[in-house]
Length: 359
Image 1 (tube, helix red, strand yellow):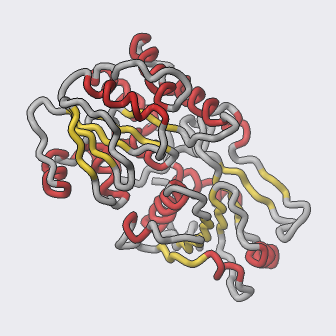
Image 2 (cartoon, rainbow, N blue to C red; image 1 turned 180 degrees about the vertical axis):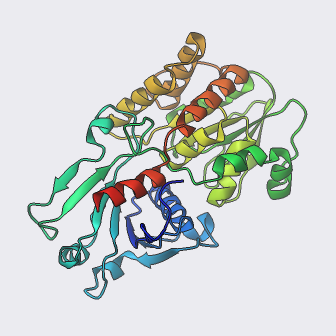
């Protein structure tokens, strides 16, 4: 569980900075980070420029987490905490950074980077960046990279998550929360993707092969056109983060996107298809290929080939003319992958140890 508060390691005040660029990934990751820290006895101020998504994502808040408006951090009266985390290189306000230079001791300043399986992550994780100019001159900034190997910062995984997944009665939860009564032989698939996904038109054909499928479409997404009789649709309401985690566990197949739902799908241990955040310069293609190389390294050859084709097609990097692999072998591989990740330290445990060592 990482370093917990004690006489030798008293709680530290954390300042987490988040800018919401688009979609919900930025605030989703930052909220999970802040809530996990708070649950481990670490008080957190979450500075965010748009907290509106938290109204449905985390309507009850979290113990130890104080959500503050970004602009307030520019006040000269704000005293920085012991640890400052800027998520995804968002650059805290200059006045706040100047205040960091006056603190004794100086806060541990961490840039929490984007998740990637690319090789540079292992080389860059934990590197120090001395600030030689600007408002933070004289401070050190540390690069902290989430990842999938022991030489990275790990993945967000709060204590008890996997036990909760194991204890979940998926059919009972689906009926009680969403009014979904699963039919005999029916396959449940959740859909969370970026609007305008080019491969959406090929999804009905992919789902029509195999058992009847009920497609659970997340709030705000249009329903795919041309659904065959074998595919029915259930539109989902907005779900809290905890409810979305249960949805992923309760489904047979999950289409996920970005970073937050991507990680949660892996912890759910169900077959999943990831859509990387599409970028005009094609960087997402390298991120996708790097993860597939790692994820499929121990997969049976036939399953590996099928999943690589499916994922590339879903990301618009190849033809979406492949069917879905059989769920049995796919499920077994996802469970094996999850076990390999579970053997690694989680991100917050790693962060706590890193900060104590750095201080």
